[in-house]
Each structure stands twice: as C-alpha cells, then as structure tokens.
Length: 284
Image 1 (cartoon, one colour):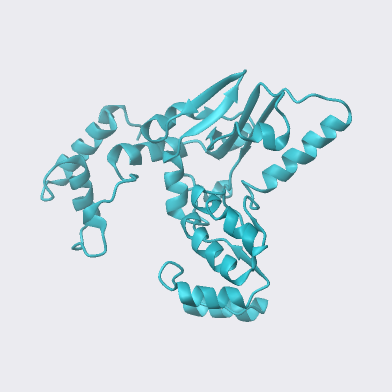
Image 2 (cartoon, rainbow, N blue to C red):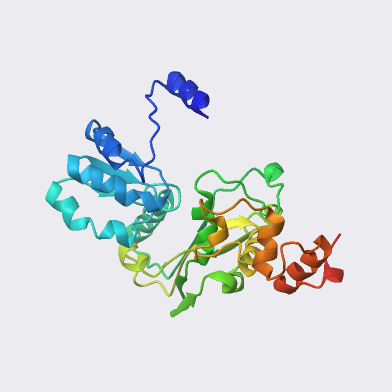
C-alpha cells in the first residue's frame, strides 16, 4: 500500500502523508495549517476532527458527505473563525443537487410549477463486474455503505409524509426501477428528503423523494446481513481488538445462538431459520 501511494504521488505531483486522523490530531493540525483548502473524503465520522483542525488554523474545508449533527455543532466556531465549510459536494449528495437546481430553475423560468420531484442515484459497478452477492463494489468506506441501511428515511408521497424505519424493515421500502430495464435496478429512500422542499424551493411538490440506486439483489442480501446480526449498531465484544481471534464460522455460531463447535450442517440450518428461509425453496 505504501509503495502504491508513493507511486501515485510521483505520477500526479502530490505529497502523500500517512496518519491516523482519529489518533494523531496534533499531526493533523500541523498538516492542515500548511494548506489553502482542505477537501475531506474521509469516512463521515472523522469530518468533525478535520473541521476542528480547519477552524483552529482558519482554513476553508469542503466534503462530499452530508452535514451531520456533529458538524452542525461547529457552525458557530466556523463563523467565528471566518472560514467556509461546505458539505454535500460529491456525487450524491452533490451533483444530484446541481442537476436538480438546474432543472428546477429552468422550469420556473418558463412559469412551470414543480408538483413532483423524484431522484435516484448510486455508484454502480459495470454490469460485468457486479459479480458478487451484493452486485456492488466498495469504492469508499464499507462501513458507511453498510450502515446506511440502518438509517431511517423520510419522504413525501402524494402529500403524505412517509417514514421508513431502518434495519430489517428497510426491505419493505425497496422499489424495482423501470429505468434502463436491462440493468435490473432497484431503489430505496435515502435519509430525509422532505427538508429539500425548502432548500430546492419546491414547496409546491406533493411528492419529494431522494433515493439510492442499486442492482437488484443488493437489498435482499443486506437484509439477510441485518437479520443475522452482521450489520448492527451495537458493539460486539468478540470483534474488539483486544478479543481473541475467531473464525467466520465461530462468529456466525455466536450470532445465531449455537455452540462454536457445532457442525456445519447445524450452523446452516440455524442460519436458514434466522433468515426465515426454507432450504427447499432456494434456487440452485
């Protein structure tokens, strides 16, 4: 990894630096202090640490992530420092906002009223490379992608506010997409869409939904992970750094409530039971 980073640095004329943002705040602060602008593409939980360093050195910052409550708490400090911190400047959120506003503004210029706004966006691998159970490839923070389905979502449908509970119920909100039928896509609501009625200036809309796009099968696979407890907000003691090493089999046995020494066929039966699946109904 270090050699690859150094090669990229030489190729593009950049100076790579390796540091643990969560543990080396002093080094982070020194690095930020020498910059004109900080672009943070780290996992969203680390943005507040970068923002604090930017505030201390009065350096502007942009990020592709949503503005979380932890970042929102720094708003007064950002203003006092006289700097600018902007979020939602990636693909989604980001480019989708720009395309939305361009279209909405053009519609308003000709006197149109926006009655409905629906947008689905997703970073998809090329179809020939969607060759795993998720039909997806991680290009960023895996934990951020996986935990996204645990987030509740809210959207407006025909004048009514619809609240979606994350976790196991997430599968109920998945909709087959008829865009590009050859790609076999599905989508689900993403976070709180209703707040964009004011931001986009389309309070006239009776339907407002921003969603995530995936290949069909993604949602069902992740729903299984949630049922098994593989995606969970709670701390799992056996997976902590100080815990003893364990195999995937031992982990699954623990999650489905059987002895770690259980035979594979017993584990398989317990997994099917946890998922609510009848083995005979599975496709070969």
